[in-house]
Image 1 (cartoon, rainbow, N blue to C red):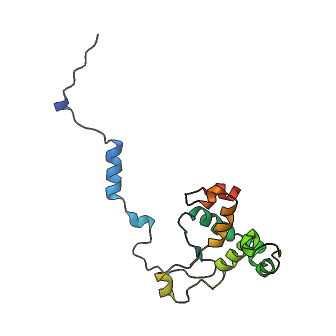
Image 2 (cartoon, rainbow, N blue to C red):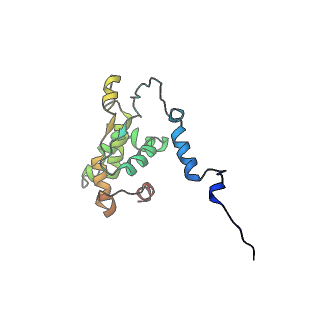
Length: 160
């Protein structure tokens, strides 16, 4: 039987632990390399750059809608013919209950100048955004999870 004797007092450390390497990285990381630090940024305020306000838990809806509303296909379906969607909502449907009307309203809002600040100093004080309350209420009517104030998944929203 082989015996190994170690004298801890004579041992020297040769490598760093993962924790030590992480602490060192955090202490020396240059965050300016991944941000715009030191640059004079001009707030972007223009049609198509209007955001959707987070209504407490709607970031999953907002991210999906902003992506969809930026595509040519959604603009061709809801933005250009928006007046047609507004004028042809079936009489038996309340516009607040019609998904196409609500999508057209959001497309117009995001791509119009109505919510854009003409003065850059105003844009800095408050973001250009709309509040998709009617849209959120509409999708929440048919889905128990989306009517709650709990966090949800963007993929589940898109599949719905």
